[in-house]
Length: 255
Ligand SMILES: Nc1ncnc2c1ncn2[C@@H]1O[C@H](COP(=O)(O)OP(=O)(O)O)[C@@H](O)[C@H]1O
Ligand SMILES: [Mg+2]
Image (tube, rainbow, N blue to C red; front, side, top):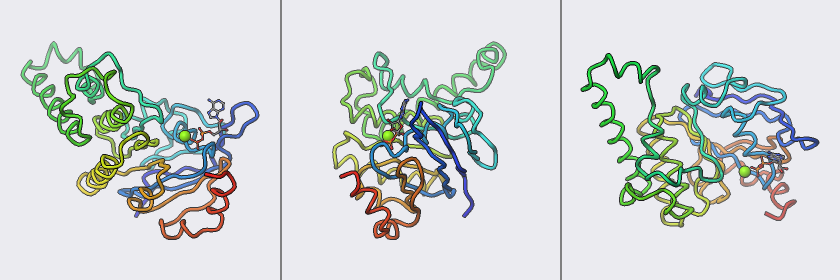
């Protein structure tokens, strides 16, 4: 299977700290790939580089055959690569539904078009967005909260709202940074099943940072392991689980 994402020799420092130190990895199209590693390994920083929230000091990132490491985040999102953050980013003073509608894809020059295109066409698109938003809310079990302010949700529910928001853009590749943190175990299993279903039904590719190794091992096609800013192992869950380098990396930090 071909790689939808290629990361090559990416370096990103903060002052003297090389948070990402020459990391390379491939994500196969249509796969669920997990990125694991001890706290501070550089996983979130790598996500920031890939999704355009940080510029790398060196290295290259290729999405669907195109270099993206110098493009801003909104352009990368338009191209079909979206991410969620480790800390939920819902707009707390908007309703849950409005948070999703804000993330709906827009055509360029929509305001201008409103004046020219029939009002019916605009309304139809708004209805489609609303339908999609409702489906995604059902997916993350938030449909009962559609009209509540996002600020009233629990921490776990806000993470789920973030996942739904990311999917609202209709991405080809979604990067999820610890989407299950703070989500109760039952819902965690359900969310995971739904992510697998999205892959199966829509061909969505998923790159996931996750601490729950049970989840990782159960859902992933491939696992990539980072430690000290570099990729130290890569393979199927079964291969990675018994890799001595991986065992060392985790034992070394007491995780
Ligand atoms: N904005 C930042 N400024 C300074 N240091 C940072 C920043 N972001 C991350 N770091 C440092 O980079 C290293 C990697 O962090 P991070 O990418 O968050 O790791 P992970 O997500 O694997 O836990 C850590 O040492 C962290 O303290
Ligand atoms: Mg992190």
